[in-house]
Structures are given as C-alpha cells and as structure tokens.
Figure: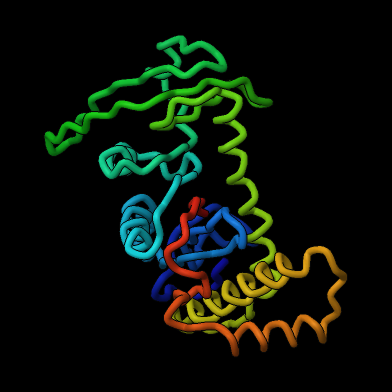
Length: 249
C-alpha cells in the first residue's frame, strides 16, 4: 500500500491499512517444477487484461504455453477472444451475470456458450467457449474455458491457481522494504525479491528429501550462480524453452 503524495506507478486498489492506493504489479507464475515467477509487468493505468495479453505475447517467444489460469478479475471479452484466437488453453472464473443465470446451465457438466458482445464503438466480439457451473459456499459460481473436460477435473485445474497465494506470501517475506517514492527503485527491489524466491524454489526442489542448513543453502546458491549458463536463462532465472502453465496475480 502507498501513503503520501501521488507518484509514478500508483493505481487505485482495495482499501487496506488506511489507503486505497498502491504500486501494482502483474506477475506470471509457472506451475511446472521447478515452479517460479517467469515475468513481471507494471500496471501504470491498472489495465490488467491488456497488460496480461502483452505479457503472454512476450512469454510465447521463449516458452510454449500449455494453459493460462486466471481469476475473475481477468475476465474480459477482448482478452478471452485473444486466447481463443491464439489457440491458448485457458480457464477463468466467469462473472455471474443475469444472462448467465437465465441459461439454467446444468451443474457439473460442460455447456457450450456462444455470445456476440457489442461494444460502444460498434465492434462485435464473437465468443464461443465452455461454461461450467458449480455449487460453492457462497452460492453458484461459473468457470469458463476453451477446453471440454470432466467438470471435476476442470474445477481441480482451476484450484491450482490458489497456490500463487502461498508464493505471493513467500515473496513478501523476502521483499526489500523501502519508503522511496521512486517507481523504478521499487520495481527493482520487487524483481530482486522474486529472483530470490525463484532461487529458493529451485534449491528446495533439489534438496526436498533433506534438511538443509542455512550455510548449505548459501553454498548451493553460489554453486547455482557459478554453473548457470546465462544465455539459457531469462531475467527471472527460469530456463528457456520449457512448457509452462501460467497463473497470474
């Protein structure tokens, strides 16, 4: 959260700790071992879906993307149309609007949904994908996907996105704290925190069967850095040309 005068990179967000403004970043998280953050983008204007689309296009240059998993905040007709046209598998939470409820979609079965969305400028966006309806603690909810799967498998697939909450908390644990209003400095510190998180993920994956002392962790980090071929890794310290499953927060 941000307190004080306006600064570059500040956007509106949910009220917390006496403020409704914050520096906001978009992170792409790969779900395959070794798991890690593969990209970060700033959200100057808060345009989440447009920035996500641009980020995916950049990632596709280095990674074959198997699937994109996002929550309801990312649901927008233009973004869904982009994923469909790009033939990228996706699953997202679908907004529970009146026209969806009127369809009386059966529970736990894929429903082929087709809709023409008209924008104010006259553009028509043709959408066609599968809808899944489920019973939740707070009422019914819907998932949208261009994949026709068993409803239980689809729900299980979407739940994998929740793992990013754990990753986000771990990044915050190692985040470098600063009071500077300089956006670039804050972005640099956040990227460093994400790189530390990625290195820790790789070390933990490698030594998962052992109890690792702190000195051993440091030694492993040094060895990893010394033996890494930098042209085989991207800026987030992830090896290129691997298939990845993306989740965004």
